[in-house]
Length: 286
Image (cartoon, rainbow, N blue to C red; front, side, top):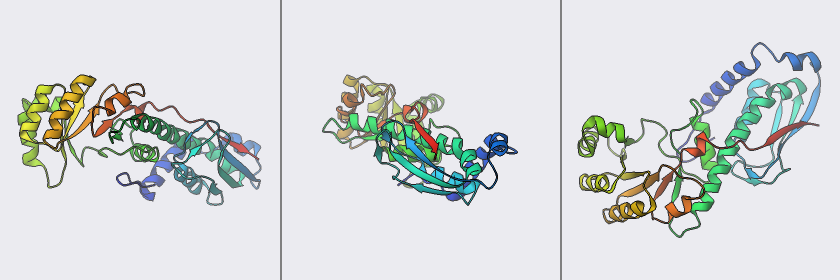
């Protein structure tokens, strides 16, 4: 599972899946083991029960590989594809016990990640209604240990990954500014410590802060919770100085198009990962 910025290695995925199986299966699936004969071979299909963008098929497949290598998982679509209700997205065959035991975890991955991809795609579609080219970004508002997978799902939906963590970009927020004693001091300290090619971004809540940040010089300014009128002013100022702009705070499907029309380069949305509704997907035994 990879995209330009988000990478999850098989090692990290295996660790995640093993921990998830320990949590769910524990010492054994006592219901399935009591009802299903050990040597029973079966087939199943995974079906989308509503329209959406699929994400997480590699994780679902790896879930079964970790659980029982005898299970055969065949994806019928690719991650990032839009499917209609009733579409078969995968076929599974092998030991019936393993298929049933892994059902919930495989579906959890698919439903959650497909929900993120679908919501991201909706924001992308709304923002694309204007002529300005704007990128939809995710944030660090992800479930602990799920970040790589969730950011992968954002990419599947047409979004772009923001920083992966606290280690790959400098983002000076209001609390940093307060402790430093102002935007100027915070930026200067960051510039003095930053390694080469590390992006420096600063949060600004009002035009006066935007002007101050422009004067000192940064790579990007995060325009936080600004109304449309103020956003337009801020974007115009930043464009003159060739500084990239990112709008954030209070973004929803009703106002994202208007925000995009202001000319911002990026719109970051925490809701992509923390509030996405799971896509309805089911596993049916044949």
